[in-house]
Length: 498
Ligand SMILES: Cc1cc2nc3c(=O)[nH]c(=O)nc-3n(C[C@H](O)[C@H](O)[C@H](O)COP(=O)(O)OP(=O)(O)OC[C@H]3O[C@@H](n4cnc5c(N)ncnc54)[C@H](O)[C@@H]3O)c2cc1C
Image (cartoon, rainbow, N blue to C red):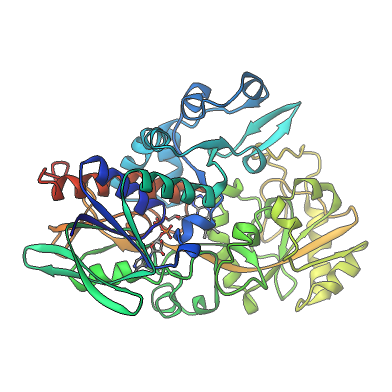
């Protein structure tokens, strides 16, 4: 019997396990996936983490390897807590749960430093979140740091830390149900190697991800059409943790009809492929236009910085006829396209004239596509300067669907286009937790011995999401859940913050 059982082995689960261990508890982690596929969605990420910092000194505390030359060559800016709070409010239409949001923001920097103390290393995201202006890199979207070697590096780092701390990880061990009675949760029923057994524990922390890999639940909660969306990450996140908690009377929370979904290679496999990671995403759309099967544009590609639109534009593509679109660019912006456009696994066409390009857009009304591109080109206010680092206000005028920033006429060959569909990242609906990370029941009383973290926590995200917040939320609430579970199982009062 362990003091604490943690269900899952992604970022939130490891944060919970290590925090529980810090409280002196013995910890066993249950990972449904086999070892070579372990790590949940976390392993699929680039490892980008959004946290509040007041300037480069805060970053140097986190990344002591930064050299003076690197600091001199970069404008890291600042990302104060107030701005993080504001971004969370703005993108969720002010629906984000204020208690959860405030904890996420205020604990973001301390939690990054805690991870660093544990042995997780970080690096600036030079390639994806900064552009070079006048010889200096400048960060533009509040997202500055990624885990060393991305998601795989983060999982490897956590796995090594867990081993060092004497935390046991059981692979291929699927949690099936919670062992509970009126006094609370006492363990987990687990199936491993075809054998089902009961593992007892003083407390259980659930960090088993959302339900995005469950077609039936996607259709049930997100709605019609979501059954055919691609899953960007792990096939193991089928909502088991949520189901187990709901079965014993846990209170759902947050936007159960909502999810994070992006533009994703049209011919990508049904689930994520660890060999490609997040390479199927196509995030450079602010520099081009999107065309659907009718040959029409259907959204404002330049509404905001990509970090604040990418997570809801997958849903917009899903709503289009046959659930796909083509992203169209010209040679002027080719150098701005992210690395993911240069992988082998892309559906891409090129042409030297717009007429040829329109004809090559498979499944598209070519005549209408050409008319749309021609009208777009004529509507761009070219007298405003193009600047990818700021919302430059270089927009279209007179179109039913405007492009508000970074509008460039698509007039310089060669032209290229990439086919995308909707890729679902993770679901927003989850459980209601209290300030100690304890799961609340439908009467809003904590369920003794049950904690939750990561994608399983409901209430933070509605409709949209600021890039890099998933891992940060997993770390903050994982650490909270683990600290409380460890203190409770070790006899200390883990609910003092409730
Ligand atoms: C392609 C991609 C790129 C992304 N990029 C970023 C990024 O750069 N920055 C960012 O912040 N977020 C990113 N995200 C989102 C991020 O991955 C998640 O928000 C975060 O990893 C969630 O962590 P978690 O620990 O809650 O879940 P996960 O990491 O998904 O872990 C869930 C764990 O539970 C296990 N599990 C499930 N069911 C059971 C069961 N019954 N029994 C035992 N174990 C079970 C799974 O196998 C897994 O180990 C990205 C996601 C994807 C898919």
